[in-house]
Length: 372
Image (cartoon, rainbow, N blue to C red):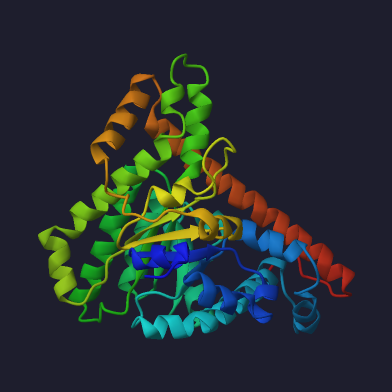
């Protein structure tokens, strides 16, 4: 077994994905180096990540200058984003082939404006899937009620889906249901299941941020701080384990279906009082993914401890959630707020991104059209 903690993490059954993308790392060999050195097997992107990438430096200037025809800011962004994601897919393609299609995925997200409209989500996801045109791309769909409807339709259509912004166990349950129903729809149509892949992105650290804030007004609750997020995620993993043990899933697996793996997102530690790799160390186990920003990958490589933890002390996790609820803190209210905040944050990043792209385009002597 490798001495590198990241390789040991991979050996423990957890895929390591990078929660970051920019054109520089795609072209200067940095991404390939990370694949080789850090056991990296995938990558995720979102509007906030692209906002930062486009705001810094001049890596995208040549493509903006060379873009022919008239574009809206949204269309130009989509051209830029799909180019980066396609290039990243190509870099990860050897990983994808080596594991026979089970990993090596790169995610691109539908615009947050489509989050509460299943038809708009399906239309945009289908377009992104066709534009990137790589077997190892995943399209990210928010885990809203309408998003779950879209997941079923997209899965049936053969699109790899990464369901994002999951905070609540109930929402996760509906996403598992949507994936299985989509596979059943696809099987009923006589279509292949083996090449369809999905992950369900369950957000972690943000849960502690919100719960800890609410515990501040509750005397004598310091022992509960920093505990809600991992407990919530462990209960999500228990749900995953129970669902893949059902006759319904076993029937789909017999037809070649692959499990929708839980993906731990938002795993950088926000509170400096907490161990900087706690959201990695406490959620290690088979059939999982952890998407980490570069600084968390670096920290785990330096001092991460690897042992199977994701399904240990589950009863304690349940007691933790019960104790938080007993303080008058509704986890349903917490997770509803976090979903709303997450969508609002991505929308703000998206708006900032488009405004910045308009300014950059103008500074390079080009004009965008206001609408189509």
